[in-house]
Image 1 (cartoon, one colour):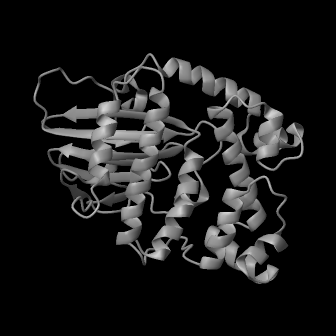
Image 2 (cartoon, rainbow, N blue to C red; image 1 turned 60 degrees about the vertical axis):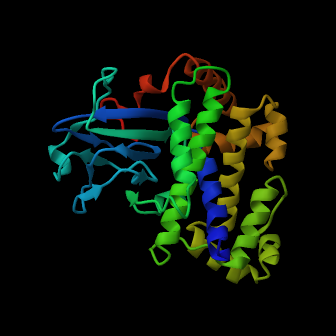
Length: 324
């Protein structure tokens, strides 16, 4: 893989780590005859994979796009969109609703759908900078990972045993990463943050690997081999925010994952992500997510316990005004 693609994917991985603190859901959707669904905007990232049949992708500001089996539709920051059996306008489509397809009944179309729902915080800036709705036709011969991931997610959806939530999150991570990787490779000149700059990539690597270090702009600029002024200007242009703001966001993302995935005490997590005290970490966490670290952890644990009694088909991914 070209060097610039590897560096972009490293930042992409950080962005997907940020959405992983949301609720992971997946389901299969089937229909026949004349059908059309409108998905309203939501806080998170989601995708559809057309498994069988034909469909059209409907957006508010672009002509309808025809989809064929294997095509993937991605909403990096949860933008509104629609799917239909024929070209249409978004306003003409009914809100998507959950409905169990009768077992054994043939369906004209089938989609695999997945999403991360963010109840706290917002979609990372990098994902918000991408096009609102992305559609790709994967090259399965050159990059077969998406087909394999689609099969794994489909097989995992009924999972209700221990670890089901973790497995689903990991599979959605991989799906989002590979979809965006293919899109980046197909759209090298697209208008998006380009972090193929080796100096900035070096500084990002230091931030991601050592969030607990007491970084200063001077130290980060030295890791990039640049003057502080030039580094700050270039970093802000490429990432959309100053170095220290990015560092804070990464620390809080990492802290949220530790709260969700470990039993480490809050004081230990605070130190691990670069805060001198539990109080300082808590104050920064509340500003970012609107909730205390302890409350966040308790809610995630309750959700995890509740999630073990539902199958993928019962999740509210395709319900009411909700949207992947």
